Amino acid sequence: MIAFIRSLYLLVLVGLLGGIIFLFWRMEHKQPPISFNEFLTSLDNNEIAEVHFKGGNIRLRDNFGREFSTYAPDVPALVPRLLEKNVVVRGENDRPSPVWNLLSVVLPVFLVMLAWYFLASRQVSRGNDEEDDKEKNYRFAPSTATITFRDVAGVPEAKEELVEIIDFLQKPKKYSKLGAVIPRGILFQGPPGTGKTLLAKAIAGEAGVPFYSISGSDFVEMFVGVGASRVRDLFREAKKHAPCIIFIDEIDAVGGHRAAGGSSAGQDERGQTLNALLVEMDGFASDETIIILAATNRPDILDPALLRPGRFDRQISILPPDVKGRLEILKVYARKVPLSPDVDLENIARGTPGFTGAELASLVNEAAIIAGRTNKKSIDNNDFDVAKDRILMGIERKGMVINEKDRQTMAFHEAGHAVLTRFLPETDPIHKISIIPRGRALGHTMQLPLQDRHSYSREYLRSRITIFLGGRVAEEIALNQQTTGAEDDFQQAIDIATKMVCKWGMDSEIGPMAYACDVGGFLGEQVKSTNYSEETARLIDREVKKLIEECYAEAREILKREMDFLRHLAEMLLINETLDHEEMEIIYTCTAKKRLEQEGGEIASAAEDAPACEVETWDKKTLRI
Image 1 (tube, rainbow, N blue to C red):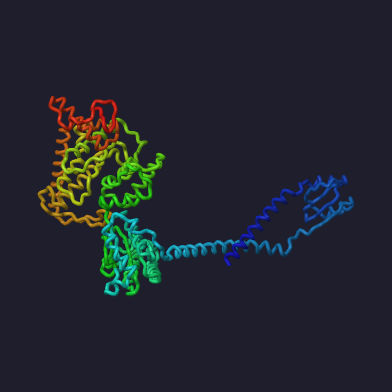
Image 2 (cartoon, rainbow, N blue to C red; image 1 turned 45 degrees about the vertical axis):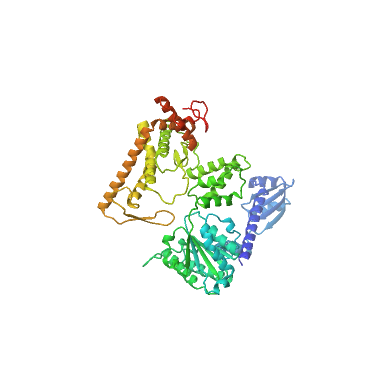
C-alpha cells in the first residue's frame, strides 16, 4: 500500500511538472497584444482575415498571416462590421465546463490529503525501520573466533587457569563422570588494555565453539524491560548452540550495585536487567555446557550477588605484564612487521616497565609508522625510541616559540632533576633529558627502571620526592628565581609524602598506622575516606610538611655541591636540547676531570678514561665544555 501511494504521489508530481512546462510553453508562444483602436483601423483597411472570439478576448489573423490578440469591450456591435468586411468569424464558449469546476475544487484537496498521507506513512515507515534496525543490531548470532592462545602472550598464569575450561568445553563427559560441574562464569578483572577481551576470544578459538560477544551497555535502554528481554533472548539463543561461550564486555555497566529504596527509571532498568542475568545464570540444566565470560576494570562496583559461587565461580586478575611477559607480547606483534637485525626486543621490553599489551601494540605500530614516514624498509631501534618518547611524553610541539630566558629556565630545571638522580640512592637511571616541549610539558626528565618494582623502599620514595623538588631548587640557586614550572612536581611530591605518612607509616612520629583508605578499582582512586580526628589531621599535615622540607634541604645541599655539573649539563641542554644517559655521564666525567685539573690534584682513574673534553664537535663520544 505504501509503495502504491508513493508511486501515485510521484505520478502527480510528474503531471504537475508537465503542466508547468506547458504553461511556460504557452507563454512563449502567446500572440502579441495590440490595442482595440489598432484592431479597428486594420479592419477599416481590410487587413483582417480571421477573428476568433472567446468571450471578450479576440485572437485575429491578418492578410499577411500574422496573429495578434486584443480585447473587445462590445462584441455584439462588432460582429456586423466584421461580416460587412467579409472577415471569417469563429467563436468559443468562455464558461468553464462542470468537470473543470469539479476538478478545481477536488484536485487541491486531493493533493493536500495525498501529501499529508505520504508524510505520515514515511514517519511510520521510518519508525518501523528503526525498530527493525534495533532488532537486527541486537539479533544474537554466534561467531567463530579465529584468535587462539598463540596470539595471546604476557599472561601465562591466566592461560594455565583457562586450559581446563577449554577441556571442559571439548570433553564435558570426562568431568561429569566424576561428578564435577563445569564453572558457570569467569570474570576477568584488570586495568584497561591488559588483554581481557583478547583472552576471551582466544578461549573460544581454542575450544572451537560458538562465541557470543556483547557489551554490558547494549542491554541498557531508556525503555524499562528492554534489557531484561535481551538477556533472555541471548540465553535462549545460546542454549540452542550449546556448548558455547557468552562474553559480556564491561559488565559493570549492567552489573553494578543495586540501590536500596526508591530509584530512578534508569536504575530500575539496570536492576531488572541484572535480575534477569542472575536468573539465567542459575537456570542452566546439567547438560547445557554454556560458559559466561565477563570483563571489567571496576570490580569494586559489581553487585555481590553476581560474584557468589555458582555464578562467576572464578575471578582472574589480568595485570600489566612483567619484563618476561612484555618480551613475549613484543614477539607476537613483531611477527607482523619487518624488523631490522639490530633490533633488540629484550632491551625494548626492559625499557617499557608498566606498559600494558595495548600500549606495546601501539608502540610497535607507532614505530612502523615512523619508519614508513622516512621510507625505510624495516624498523630499527631509533624508530622504537622515537615511538616510546611519543607514547610516554607526547608529540613534539615543534611550532612552539620559546624565548631564550624561558629556555634557560627549562634547562636548569631539568638539569636539577637529572643531577639529583645521578647522586641519590636507589633511583631509577636516567633515560633521556629534554627541553623540547612535548604534550603539556615544556621539558621532561625520563627515568626508566632496570627491572620491575613490586614494592618500594623508604629510601626510594624519599629520593623520588627529592628529585621532584630538584627542578625548583635548581632554578633558585642557579638563576635566583621561582617559576610555575614546578607545579606538577610539587603535586607528585606531596602525593608521595602523604601516602608515606598516612598509608605506609614511614618517616613520621605517627608510627605504623594507616589513616587513609582508598576505595576504587583498576581505574585509580575513586573515593577517599578518612577515619581520624582533626588533631590527627593537623599531626599528619605537620609530618608531611616536615618530610617535604627535609627532602628540599637535601636537594639544595647536593645541587650546591655539584654546581659545576649542574651548569655544564644545563649548557649542553641549551645546545643539544636532548641528552641521554650516556651523554650525561660524559658531561659528569669531563666536569670531574676539569675540577681535578683546576685543583691540581691527581686525575681519578674514571677521569683518565674519559673522552676528549676540548673538541669542537659533539656526539655520544666527544664533548666540548
